[in-house]
Length: 258
Image 1: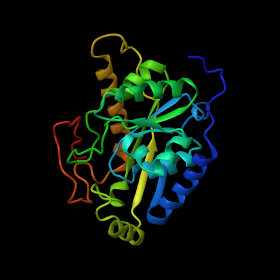
Image 2: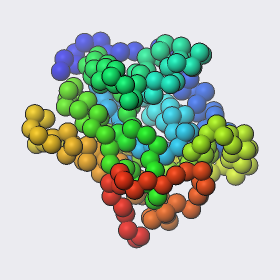
Image 3: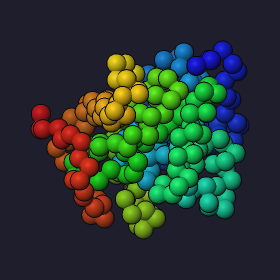
Image 4: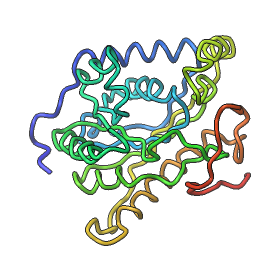
């Protein structure tokens, strides 16, 4: 990949949104960020791969990336881009539309690969949805993040987060105001950790099953980064969201109690 070209520069509207996100998170939770993004990678090309546990995650990750001086382009569901105001803001900020379940979903990977090739940092959720594992450990991932890494050759850094599920419930916007009021009073701790780059060497991108093996390695990396964030909740989370369904069909790995 030619990294000598001028890197993509995040527009002012996105930098401003990151500052606003820090204020929003600070108003309802206590944020703890650990781990680093190497300075040489902060401007890209880079892939950030995060677990997905709550509708509040995008705001949290927007805030913590600002803390670590990273401005990623986020791969987000097409529904956000169809919203009258939010959609226009998402497009102007340079984020990448993912129309899941449609024939156009493959275009998202092409757009993301082009973005990384242009020197961007791209943030992906390898699980492809808010995880429904009963223990809230990362699920078996979709292969898109791995295929993106193979396509552009950029490093992948796992980003683990814990605590955002205590701010907004799974069925948001149902119960939104009550949840925000509760979080404002209780101020739960949200922990986010940037792990070490994931080694995808030796997987052979052109060999059968390579994308699946790479995906499992990415999910393993996120899981390993998540373990120290929830030392007193090794099996099941303390905070139980009654509106959150459970689905074990995509369980990747369960961590036994310490």
